Length: 296
Image (cartoon, rainbow, N blue to C red; front, side):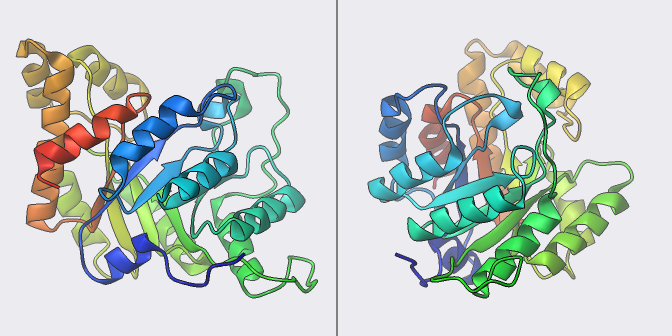
């Protein structure tokens, strides 16, 4: 059941329209009911939903399982594929399975180390990184596996990867981007960005690259969350003005939603990127509220 039609995300980006993707995490358990209720709220408002792949190396239901459920709901899914937990056999098999179920988008990630997760004794694999995962997808889409064996039906993915615009030296990220584009990446979703100037500069740096960039949006829940990310999360830089705004707000979570929505609207208005990727981190029900603020 391989669908050779281009994905909605691909169609939107190639038409020059501002694309919106959201991130959703599978449950830690077998009950998908809550996350699927939220999925209903996103219909018609996003062009793709990333399903995290054992995010932060924590045990949850699989990305593919939830992608299948989202596709049943009429939402276009974006399969995340990390190299941490799989060798080349498992990576190829998962991609073929996704292709059977009509998944049209895939995001390649190397993955966080197992020591950061809730089963730190797990043995990591890391046979492939994000670049070799993209290369593998291209091979499978050509109709054969990595060993040159012919496939009976091939997947057809719109391929993406990640990039961190706040990085020193930024040249390292630009080199990685070029390698990922050469390996097949057509779109990039960034680490969370909070300053429009970052995206202005990043657009200039990447203007000659053949790809689309979606700015990462993380709704802030409090000034404490912002300060923690500044201290502890690589590639994150929340401006002092936003921290002060959150500190003074009576309803800090609501203010965080307003900040995120206003930023999405500004990104779209200035045209400094091709879309926004909203990462609500366990509060996916806030994605429609952010889009309401943004007027999208």
